[in-house]
Amino acid sequence: MGRSDSSPVWIDCWRPMEVPGKDLIERARRKDAEAFASLIRTYERVALSVAFGILSDASAAGDATQEGFMRALERRADLREPERFGTWLC
Image (cartoon, rainbow, N blue to C red; front, top):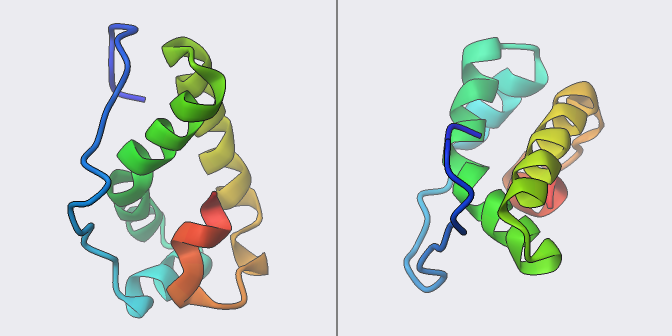
């Protein structure tokens, strides 16, 4: 997702991540494309890191991350607790 090489993506898991506001998540649930794109930008590195940790393959992790975001987009109305978006996504 936005990377052209196949090198693994690492993040500092101890660094606090800025969590999007509940209003942004609510807008994404109501089919606001820009709000959903913002959520993708916020969670992309974490999702990619989780996928790489499981799959140990950068290309497969990228594919899995993209598939995960597509499913989240399709099922965003199922999210009952917006403040738990990150957990719901993974």
